[in-house]
Amino acid sequence: MSVLGKKWVLNQGKISDLLTQNLDNESVTFHDPFLMPNMERAVERINNAITNKERIIIFGDYDVDGISGTAILVKVLRELGAEVSYRLPDRQDGYGLNVNWISELKEKNIDLLITVDCGISNRKEIDEATAQGMDVIITDHHTIPEKMPDAYTILHPALGENGYPFPHLSGSGVAFKLGVALMGDNADIWRDKLVDLASLGTIADCVPLIGENRWIAKQGLDQIRKTEWEGLKTLFNKAGGDNSNGHDSDLVGFRIAPRLNAAGRIETPYFALQLLLNENNSAHALSEKLEQLNVQRQHFLEEALKKAEERIEKQSLLNKKVLILWDSDWRSGIVGLIAARLSEKNHRPAIIMEERGEELVASCRSPETFNIVKALQSMAECFETFGGHAAAAGFTLKTSQLAQFVGMMEEYAEKHISDDDLEPILNVDYEVDLNEINKSLLSKVTALEPYGEGNSKPRFVVRGVHPLSLQTVGREHSHLRFRVQTADAPVQAIAFRFGPHYDLLQKAVFDQRAVDIAFEFSRNVWKGREQMQLRVIDIKI
Image 1: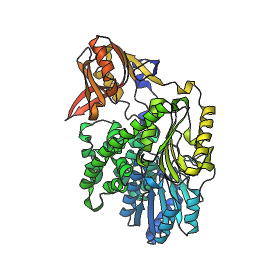
Image 2: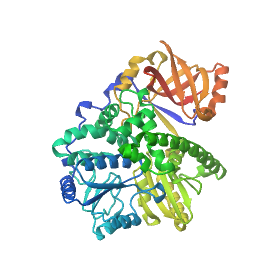
Image 3: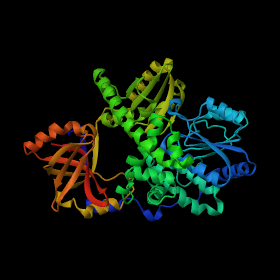
């Protein structure tokens, strides 16, 4: 076993096969938005609302996908002269619409409600909005329920048997298509202006980076570096975007997105949206605010993880096939992060809840061997609201329903998760020699960017390595850094969250024992200088 306790499975790939992956970039394109079912109806209704000076509100989700999609539609509708405002739910309210929101919108005399990255699971709330005299246009990409809301119209890339040619758009991707469609003769110009915002949600929401999503991500990463949106430009600089190049999706996934998400996790998602909109020229002040909130988010997460792992060990929860934990101190803004870390580490679904007296708000994460939203659908009677994808979902639950839910979920997991599914496995694509770790290999790896879901970054293993200059780095010494001597020159290696294994590895270095390293190969850019870097995934001594 490895340092992380994982079994390595080598897929026996050859380096010569690296560029033969099924990623024909020439066939990746931007589809006509009007190929999406109901697009004409949605555009006509919005144009009528603009002409008649009706009050329009955009209701987006609180994550990066919902926020960036909301920013797209607000910018487009303002450009078209619409009377438009926006709302975002607080994470304390849970995912999606609720009846209280509908009551507020009625008081504001809203005529047209447009959802972004939510709505498809809010049948009751949308029925209420319709009863109150509002027309509702849903733009969403989440799992389609058996009974859909009775909205004015629904834009969803997977709707209809012979519908849109690419069913995997993100929420911001669907909003992007609607925004471009609304611009009429200026569609191409606005497509290029908005693609950077669409790429934020596309990359951050982990939709498959294939097909049209690949086009959005690639074009968006190019556009971010020359964006005309002051808020995004400020955020790009604050996140160290100048130390990136090419089509490295980590720029969004690990630098920009965490800062945008930190707003809603710790305080309010409006900070992130107002930054992207540069409301009242506040971009610079808000970027500083997001920086502070992101540091707080990191601290809260580490404290919560420590508490969760202690409880898992004390209560022997790894005897269960699903991890279910709750605590009143765990903010709803970080329960998804806790669930993601625990699911990845323990190779099983994790459901983490914030306890709020009579109610719990949950976030779920799951490995690819278990469809979490399908599991939730099988016990839908337990929830006030729920929704999501196969790998990530959320719900709101009455405390009185907790025991029933835990019993049903543990029983469901027992039936649908085998013992083999729980074995932690690390799939490795290629085995390389030290003399193959060079610029030629790096150029092959970067040619297939951007990487993400559906187009995973290739994983390599190199054997018999003697780490040089091993040291801990980062806040609380949580990461490791060392060098690997290749045939050409030493290459830097970074091992995130491997700090606790420092003593074990230092002893191996002292005893002159070689190690095997599983890694991803990437560029590290610092002050305009580019270097090869191994991003360590696991180590065997």
